[in-house]
Amino acid sequence: MELTTIVNALKSGDDRIFLSTPIFLGIVTIPGMLQWKLLMMPCNKVSTQTKQIVSLPLLFIQLLIPIILAGGHRALTIIAGLFLFNTVLRCSEALYITPWIKKGTEAYIDPDKIHQDLWSCLHRPIMPKKNKNEKLPQQRPWYHLIPYLLIGMLFTDFMASWFSTFSGQDVFDIQKERSGLFFIFFVIAVVLLTTAINTIGYILQLIYTFTYGGGSYDPNEWRPLMNYPIIATSCNDIWNHRWHQLFRSIWIAVPFRPVLLLLGKMNDANNIDEKTQEQKNKKTSSTRSSTLHVAMATLSVFFVSGLMHEYLVLCGAGIQVYWNTFIGQECLFFTLHGCAVCLERFVQPYLKVKEGFVAEALKRIWVIWFSFRVFPLFLNGFAFWELWNANPFNAFTPYFLDHVWRKYPILREFCGSYL
Image 1 (tube, rainbow, N blue to C red):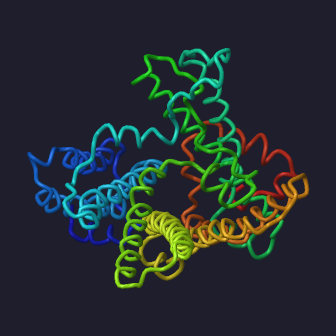
Image 2: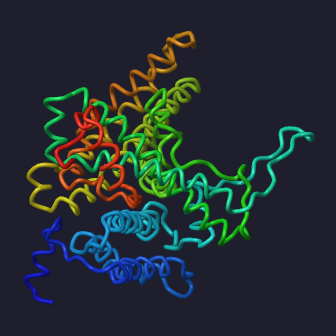
C-alpha cells in the first residue's frame, strides 16, 4: 500500500481506506481482544507497569483504526468506532486512572465483572416474588422473540426509507425554511432510534439465549434497550431510565466514579486545616459538597458522551470538515443536557406542583421543547455524511420508496430531494 494512500486516509471521512467486511472485522477485533486479554491477566503474571507500557500502542491503534479504515457497511463502521472508543475508555480507567487515584490498586479487570457489565443494559437478575402466591413467568423458548424482532426490523425499515429521501443539505435547509417539517423529522428520528436500538436488543437477547440460556429465556430478566424516550417527563427521566444503557457501566467506571473520588479527596484536603465546626454545620456542608460532587460527576459523563460522538463525527465527516464546521457541537449538546438534568434535580424539591394531567403535559412539553431546540447540535455533524443511510434493516426500502413515498403526492411533499 502506497504511503500517499495512508496519508490521505488520515484525513478520515471519504478518504478512509475501505475494506471488505471480514478483513475490517479482523483488524477491528484483534487489538481490542488483545487489550482485554492483557487486562484480564493476573498481576502476579504480568505486572501493572508492564500492562501500562504494552497498552499504550494498543490504545493508540484502536483510536486510529476508525479514522483511517472503514468497512463495507456504514453501520458496521459505526459499531466498530463505538466498540473501540469505549474499549479505550474502560481500559484506560483500569490501567491508568484507578491506579493513580487509588495508590496500590493493580491494573486488572475481572472477566466475570466484564460479562455482567456487558449484559447489564439488557439482562437483570430475576426479581424476587412480592408474595408467596405470585407466579413468576415461565421460561419461554427462543422463537417467542422472533415476532418482536421481525416487527422491529420492518418498522425500522419503513421509517428509515423516509429518511433515505433526505440529503444532508435537505436537513440543513429545512432547519431554516420549514421548521414544521424539521419538528416532524426530530420526532420520527427519536422513534426510529428507539425502534432500531430495541431491534438490536432483541438480536442481542437471542444471542444470549442461545449462548447462556439453553435456547430459552425468562421475560422477567429482560428490559428493553430503549424505553420510549419520546414520552419522557424530564431530562433526568430520558437519560437515566428511557435512553439506551449500552455504555452506562463504562461511564460509571469512567468518568463518574473517578471524578467523585477526586472531588472527595480534594474536599478532604481542603478541610484538613479548618477549625472544628458545629455538627449541624458539618452535616449541611457535607450534604452540599456531596450534591455538588454528584452534579459535576454527572456533567463529566455527559461530556465524555459528547466526546464519543465528536469522535464518530470526525471519522465520518473527515478532519477538515469536522475542524472547520462541527467541532464541539456534540460536546455542547450533551453538556447542555447534563446541565438540564442537574437543574431539574436542583429545582424539583422547591416545586410545589400538584400531580395530574396538566403537570404531566407541562413536563413533557418542557422535555420536547428543550430537546428540539438543541437537536441541531447533535444532528448536523451526522447529517453531513447522512448517517441514516447506515440503517442495517433495509431489505424493503426500495419497495417503500416506490409504493408509498413516490406513489402518493401528498406524502412526497414531506420527503427530501433524493425521492
